[in-house]
Length: 477
Image (cartoon, rainbow, N blue to C red; front, side, top):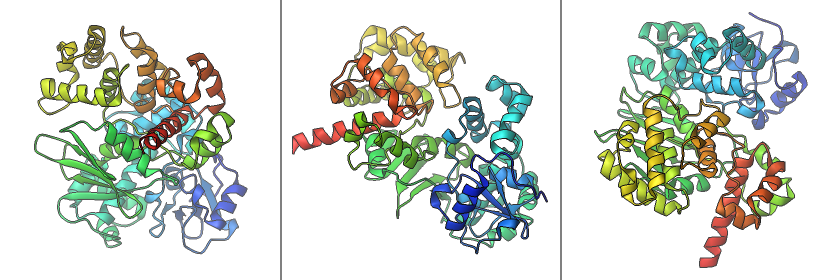
């Protein structure tokens, strides 16, 4: 077993030691503690009596701890920790690579393929993972599969073959081997450590997140943009239809936690659905850091009021969100939602229409300017042809440039897509009419004023929209 402290920690050993001793929840997910005498790695909030400092080793990720020969703690369950915030990495290619890993890319592709996707050499990509996370891309992918499988063993009644599928293992044999290697126990033994069991053929998991989390804002944001027949938002419950057979996904706020419920259907494995849900509900953000920065800006702090923990809701599907952003150019959210519903009815047969279908459609007939309809058709054509990818593995600048090259797509739409699809925390549509109204400024003045809000301008936008909503509500009372 490796007994040297990790050399890639984003935090100093002294910071880690203080956080471990105080069980500071702010550091949960930021580093991992390995105890030499037990061979176990833990979260810094583990309730077990703290080990002596001389027996403790710190790691930047669970995968790094497993590479060093430690096994996960069955008490604090490292698989339940929030994800490491992306801003701590401060490396755009590495962030993109991690999003590929999260999506299950390495389940079917090689590390060399991953390096090509992020425009790096395989060797340099390996160095970045070693420098920032203390591990390799393959080790990180394996650890995340193992952690998801552990949760399914503890929290569902799924059979072993279904767990292997949902967690992204290629076979039952690989699942058994990797779980034994990680935990030094067979999966059947781990299942005896059950915490709670879902009933029937529905997978039910709590979703780790960092407080504060303004749940009301997130569900209200999604409710205003609900696509009839495809999505439903009732109170603090979001549901989305997955297929024509009537299977629905649900994310609801229950007992102070977000809970995902998903039918056990092969075409929607959890390993692929969870990253999408985390993106939609912006679960990996660190609101404490973001809010502290924004509250320190005199030009913005007055708009924040008592609101804290606002998140930037992401996209279930990048193409769908980009098209709906185009529909919303220079019209209200309500009008854009009506147009989207008409599009579903006319071209999708109850589903959001595919890129191939919209590429051939006369979209302007729904009731919009002809140039905007043609822009939607051209966007659809490029996506259908593989010339453009609309997901969070694309760089924000790259995506913005590609979208603005299409006639009829303006900077507001490109920024909005970067904000919700590319998950750029600094994307900021400075020509947004709500922003201009709230700040009483021109786009040029807004750009200058917002410089001090970097790198969290997307979250600043949420606070401006939230303040505008609050003012509108007061004016109606």
